[in-house]
Image (cartoon, rainbow, N blue to C red; front, side, top):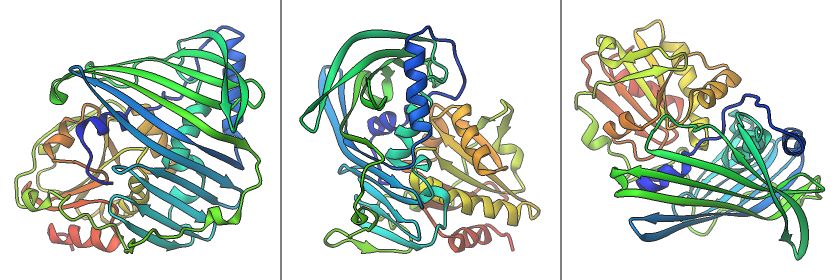
Length: 397
């Protein structure tokens, strides 16, 4: 993914509540449970809208805005599109072939067949996956729910009456600098679709210049279940000047030129079970680190290839470790379990290790040789051939 500012990384990494069940008083519980049922059972839908973030940083207002479109139909048909100068892109699949577009690079990848589960269903990636998983798990870990006065949300010129519910969740990050406030949902009384969501976050982040206040508003302009969908949705038309590539090329974004040949910074991180792992204990082995997050589409595209490297090289002195950036053990663990990945997953929840390794975009894959020196530094989604070449460069045959 394209290089982002520290603030953008903060915004994009606010996680979905970990899946667990909590007791909430009726009638709020009944409404939220119905929302969960609707999103869990989605098969054909069309959503479009915007994500707007207002940021107050030492009295200097800033804002970020992105438009999105998410549509899906049976048979693996999917369009998941975000329009934003920094993080724009699209995933498009007609069920037999798929396109992945990076707007920042103006490049796209075309694949025949379902090479990766990232395009197999809407709940697997991108804006569609993030929102659907969030609303399907709307009651998960909720500690309180408070009903506010009803309001109507206007969509397509029609007012849709909504239940407005404020839901409180535990802090989903161990970073004490970040405080997440309750989430407020505007829930359509008829369809039980979420038509608007507002979340407030306060953070004391010296690395971002001090105190940061952020308000994120997700507003839907269209939200439909089982609509008639045009076949044109499942076809990708490259924008003017877009270049088809085998893998995304990120000139001037890869710090590998300065990282390659340097001693890998030691670190100690906990795995999903809470066990501590230190890099220095792996001296004498070749280590492959994969920095990733569940919300990152290219990370999901890369993960099966990393898993394949693990299976091929685990008996040859190669240690494969995924380093999840900024998310909880529940989030990362659920994704790893669902996809059957068994290699070690470490949690870099405050991004300290990512900062040490100059990770400005994910996925970033770092290969460390037996002497503890970084031999390859790869940013973005890469083919298996490239990963094998990087491991071979570290001295593994």
